Length: 254
Image 1 (cartoon, rainbow, N blue to C red):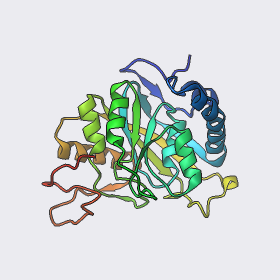
Image 2 (cartoon, rainbow, N blue to C red):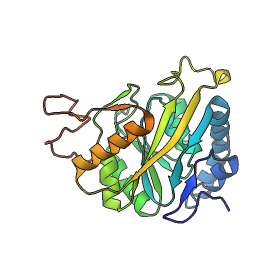
Image 3 (cartoon, helix red, strand yellow):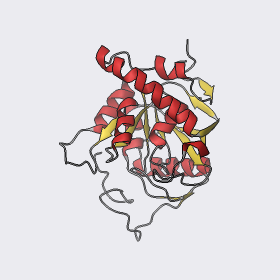
Image 4 (cartoon, helix red, strand yellow):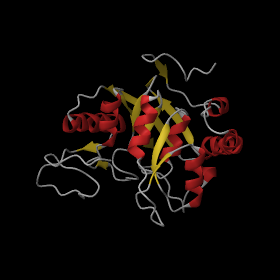
């Protein structure tokens, strides 16, 4: 049996998933037809990630249900992280590139409708993720709200810490460190160059229920794990209110 499914409080040394891992951890509850179509595509996705990048891992992964948070310097990070834990369901924005949308479907992502074109009805990604974690699953979230190539961390959305607190599960940092930050763009990426990526498991945090305090703890841990810079905003800062929340502002329901 795969060692990806061990006890709730155990930790496992980081490693890159094998093809067997990627296939045997496909959700059993999916309709047979979906599994039949998704399985060969999952093989292609795994081969593409393993041949297109030089992947290294560090740290120890905590087992059991959890919310996993990372920086998101490259558009492919939501798929790349699956090579260290193929059980995770990434939360991802709808993307205009058909190839990336196909990869999201193969990876069983929880899709938000932010910037969706054409506009679609609201889909409660937070609720779907919370239900998945409460059922014993693992969810990956980029708390900064999507692709963010800058080394200075921006003030995050509140969904990751609220989800972990409401589900009563820990939050673990997974650092995504590109050899050449922030990694190649889609127009310049060449698979034969195999850009390097370090995937580093970081601290495991227990949420306190204080959103502002938990956000600061989470972002400090991300900064320490990735070598990024985290400067908590003051009331004089002016992040985009549609994307982020400053101290003193009510938490948006995302």
